[in-house]
Length: 291
Image 1 (cartoon, rainbow, N blue to C red):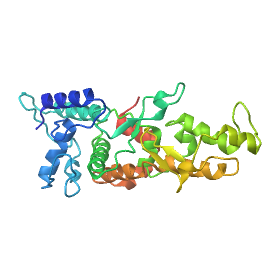
Image 2: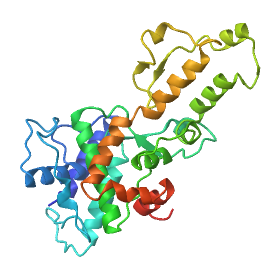
Image 3: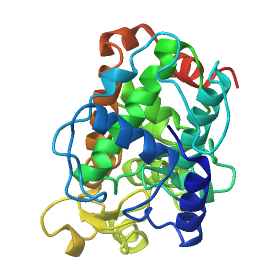
């Protein structure tokens, strides 16, 4: 049973608050679905802003035609497919809005001429138990689309689909997430600054003096040291290989915990081994449909 009017009010309030998480008593369609799954599985939590005491039993969604039947509060609707589809699309829209802190626009969003500017990635800030449980739910929804053949318009970057397959993205593939970062790493690694390539050590150190062994997360959040004391260690000609290696590893793996949560959710609906049959592009088409 879903209350669409309450969901719309909750999402509008959260978005209007300025990218803040929904309040504890929110009524988004996504949260309504999770609460009903938790109730069916006997899960408990002390407050709506805390994680449930045990993993949610998303396997209850593992039906072949549709994951659940829908009834709308205060509305007359016979669920022969239409209401179910509306709920799934509303949930997907909420996940792509500022109302839920799970998916964020990639850094390419603000970079002219970059690829996939409108795509989203898993939020590296979604690291607590509350957020990881909801990312498991995102994985379960992806599993439901694969199991039922009913697509959802997820706008996820290619590296997310690669990660769901268990594949580590390359620096080249990461250009679809953050073009500026990949260009910087390449220039530092190859000493190929566009305005002054093949610099001697003194010139190199002067050009890159403002860069240290500390980086912001890809969502622009907190700064993370690439090694102990990295915030006070400058990038130089002689340590550039180490910097490139650490910076690349940090960015390519900053969402490992979030990816693992999504994969756990998928695994409750269908075996992860089934995904190895597909490429990242094929998996995206199966989940999202032909673009």
